[in-house]
Amino acid sequence: MRTSLLAALWLVLALTVPARAQGPTPLGLEDLTWTELRSLVRAGKTTVLMPIGGTEQNGPHMALGKHNVRVKALAERIAHDLGNALVAPVLSYVPEGTIEPPTGHMRFPGTITVREETFRQTLDSAARSFRLHGFRDIVFLGDHGSTQSGERAVAARLNREWAATPVRVHAIEEYYRAATAGFEALLKTRGYRAEEIGQHAGLADTSLTLALEPRLVRATPREEPAPGERSGVEGDARRASAELGRLGVDLIVTQSVTAIRKSIESSKR
Image (cartoon, rainbow, N blue to C red; front, top):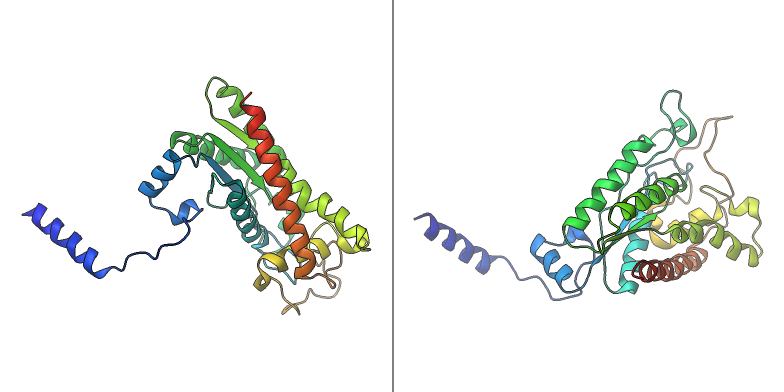
């Protein structure tokens, strides 16, 4: 009786749920079923990109989720260009300073921090999960400066542990360098000054966000800091534009794809 009921239920679902429109296969793990993922890995998609963002203040003109939205969009573009890669969920909780006393971005409402050891343990556990499910190359893509040393350390430790296996972890620092120093150098060739480009929520940072997800940027801040209060901005975003941001996006994607391919090729020797 139970078998008959299950068969009837599947028949009803088959008749009532419309078939998914044919289109490109999703690149994000969250958009796949486990059977779809298994088939893709067996078919050769054995590289997984782990986007690492961060939830932090970005001045009064840009939303707290900038890093998370941005790294997801860039990881998807990088995966598309690689051709054999899938994209893991974004890690949005990263080291952002201490809580007592508040340091760094923790001095501003909305920023979320974790301890460095917690962050590294999360990377470690995620990488072990990917290895279990058949991925051969696990790629860390960190959109935030505070994550770079942790990514390097975890990748190095796991690569030592897995030296006798075909699985490797790649901490791609070229991604972050392209998004910061590389994009800054490009903007300087176009006449923008370092103090305008800025290190955080300035011209470069805001332009990248405008190119990838403009809804996160306020043309006019809805709430301004109180007189004498820190803004959280290092730079000047007033001349930021999606057009400039697209130059940075192309730079990040191109240099990251090259670095990932080089790192994978070197690890196979």
